[in-house]
Amino acid sequence: MIEFVMPILGADMEAGTLVEWRRQPGERVERGEVIAEVETEKGLIEVEVFTSGVIEKILVAPGEKVPVGTVMALIREDPGTAAITIGAPPPAVGAVSMSVGAPPEVPTSGGVPRGPAPDATAARGRETKRVRASPAARRRAADLGVDLAAVRGTGPDGAIGIADVERAAPSARAEPAVAAPASRADAMRRTIAAAMARSKREIPHYYLATTIDVQRALSWLETRNAARPVSERVLSGALLLKAVALALREVPELNGVWTGTAAALAADVHLGVAIALRGGGLVAPALHHADRLDIDELMRRFRDLVARARTGSLRSSELSEPTITVTSLGEQGVESVFGVIYPPQLAIVGFGKIVERPRSVDGAVVSRPVVTATLSADHRVSDGHRGARFLAAVDRLLQEPEGL
Image (cartoon, rainbow, N blue to C red; front, side, top):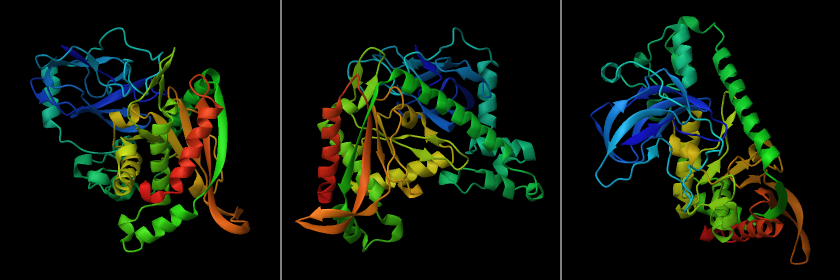
């Protein structure tokens, strides 16, 4: 029998609220299938199962808020499947049995919370029409008395946002719509602040920066995009992400997690991409296997990730599996950013705005587009020499954009 638990969706998560079961007792589930939705301060998260079998029993009812690690359901695994605890993705690291993104000291529940009988929960789940809506939209709908089942969503896959709810209740437009999102943003900022305080307290950071000439990369990109419609063009940010992913193959010490006593390096490169949310706060979901994606596919997945992050429809694996984070404030006009490592990751890479600066090229001073790349890394695992090799690799890769 396998225990399906409230997943750990980052170092700043302590609890989550079960919103909906998509499968009920007696139904079969396959590895990678979304079987539940959980609301956290980061949004509405689709939780995947990481084994195949049949749901034996549901232990947590929709609406209940429980700590991470709480057993929510029991799954009878297929014959030959080892008994494990699931609810968060398996580690992306080799020998260490832990979930990437899970802090060593995560609190767990000592027992199983009471809820309605599984049969009642199953019946209610079958009677309720599934509605995709962000947590803020659900709260706004409750405030206005709007039936979400009758609302047409305009987000990805028909997801419902606050604006959709308010359009369905015209008489409520004069009412303030910022209270719920603001409180949610405040709560998110508090949890992020707690994680960052822990990071600065426990992780011995070191910082490096370099200025990269991106003339060749931008020229190559401009030529490549010229014959494409706007919706299919690749942004310069995709080149930066791909260069980071490939550079991690050369300096793997930056790609992984700290287990509490040692580093567990990841076999795969899952880039956590920092995304600012419209109501405030941010998330850093994973672009899985970023080093294996061609530029066009990476750009498509990045656009999709941003859209779903802002409508509250991310998956649990996207929040729990990043092996390193990339952040950029270039669009805000910032020329450099030194990030704080997100525990238990080992590093964070930052990019600033692409600006014109005088450079010496072949003995002449010319104006060239450059970007400042920074690295904040864990001194317990790597050092300035390895960090410098990583930034040099990013620079070299951007000088050969056709190879990205």
